[in-house]
Structures are given as structure tokens and as C-alpha cells.
Length: 403
Image (cartoon, rainbow, N blue to C red; front, side, top):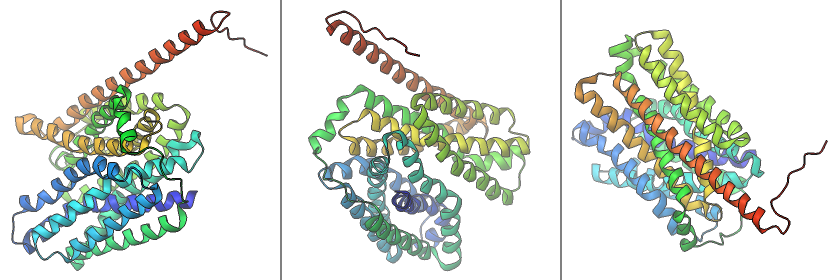
């Protein structure tokens, strides 16, 4: 099962690498296609939009397909998209390749989460999801720097060929290591039915709002480090590696604690994101403190992913694939909302520390949604206990503690 999870994580590694590597290749792409860097930057925006739209749509189209077959199809689509991108004769062709790759992204992570959770006993679901998402964290530490290095020394097409190879290896790993599962019994109508649940919507909103502060900080961390903290431009990649290592550590920790107590883990991690954002704001001029707190921020941010994904699976019992993919879309919605709001604060003249208090406010909003969702759980459980007690002929259930 660990090898199967490793195969799923390798697919996530390729997906995470292609999502962010494009940022380091923008000058070369702009020069090669004789366009501006902002125009080349639309390759990033289009990819994010494709993930948000494609995650639920593609998953819905494959609702009846066996999940292993779905994963193989998505990884084949991912590979084809990168072959198209590597051979792209024009900017429009490259844009098409990026959009096709983005359609595979959200559905793969959503369906893969369900498959990972079903590979292990119920009490280890969050840890299994965390192991798969480690691939995304590792892509920030290893994949993106490696892809950028290859792109800068061999040409941007070389970066896409590298990601193609990763996709092919991931396809082979999934084919040989992930066990066949039964064909889903729930069709599209059944998958859509879970969205009648208010708790599913609360879980999706919680993910989007809770993840927004992470990207609000990460997107503008470079100018924070150089213009506020006083680091040189050359030191920024080193600090970013520290942040990435924190994220690499955080995922497995978040999975472990979420398996023990899901919602308390959510509360604690969202509170940690708020607290660390506030401390970063207060210590933004102190180099050592900023580096340490960015590492802690990376741990807390990455640790929040497994419980947020597991929460959706808990509330979408019987039709998890589409809800899981929708939650991946919610993460990417947070990717857009956080930097947008932080950018508004900077444009309003509040400086490069403003993303930190924007992140703290967004974290408080996410924590509030989580508390509301937990309260709904407790209220529902109380109603069930009261109903069961009334249905018993001898009155309410009496609990007797033995020993």
C-alpha cells in the first residue's frame, strides 16, 4: 500500500511541478513567442482557472469509470498535454497544452484522494491523503527548482519534456502498484446529490477561505524579504527552500493528528496560521525571526491540507469523488482569492507587510467557518441521541461505565 501511495504521490509531484515551474520560465517564453511577460503570465492564470473548472467537470464525466482507470486516463491526458506544450510552435498552442494539463490536475488530485483513503484502514485516511499530497509539497522544494534549472540551461521546452517523463513514470507506477477497485456504484446523479448537504458546502467554503491566507503570504514573500526584512535578492531562494521544507514536514504531521481528532486538528492548525501571520507581521524587520516563522508557517499551512480534504470525504459519504475534486477546486479558489486581496492591500498603500494581516483576517474567517461546521455536527449528534432515546420503550439510553 505504501508503494501504491508513492505512485499516487509521484503523479502529484508532476502536477505540482508543472503548476508553478512556469513562473520561472516566463522571460524565456515571452522572448521566444515575441510577447510581453504579462501576456506570458496568462499561462499561469489560465492553468488555475482550468483547475477550478475542470476538477468537478472532468470528475463528473468520469463518475461511472473505475477509479484506477480514471487515474490512468487523467495521467495519460497529463502526459499528452506536456508533449503538446514541449512541441508548441506558437503561444496559442502552448496555452492549449496548459489548459489540457489543468483539466487533469484537479480531477487527479480529487479522485486520487479517494483512492488513497480507500487503500488504508478508516483510522488512517488522513495520513494516506497526506502521503499523496507530500508529492505537491516536494514539487515546491525539488520539482520547481529542477524544472526551472533545466528550462534556463536547456530551454523552456526541456522543462516540459522533464515533466512529461515524470508523468510517464507516474502512469507506469499507478498501472502496476495501485490495486484495481470496484466500479463506482454511484453515477453522476448520486455524486451531485451530496451537494444538497449544507455540511459539504461548509467544508468547501472552509477550504477556500482557510487556504487563501497561505497564498496571500507566499505570493508576496519575496518583496517582504527584500524591501522590509532586508535580505538580498540572492537570499530569497534560500528562504523559500526553508519555507518549502516546512511544508514538506507539515503534511504528514497534519495527517497523523487528523486521524486522531479531525476537527480539533482543523481548529488548531487554522489558529496557528492566524498566530504565525500575526507574529510575522510583528517581527517582519528581524531576519532570524522571519526565517523561523516562515518555516513554522510552512508546517502549519501544509498540515492543514489533509484534514481539510478528509473533512469533505467525511461529509460526502457514498459519493466522494466529485466532492473531493470540488475541494481541490476550492483550494485553487483560495489560490486566487488570497493573492488578490493581498494585492489590493499593497495597491492601497499599506506596504509589503499588509499581506500578513490580510492572511490573519482570512485565517480568522476560515476558523469561524470551521467552528460553525463543528457546531452543526454537535447539534446534529444531539438530535440523533434525543431521537434514539425517545424511540426506546424504556426511555432515554443510560450509559453505565464499567470497571
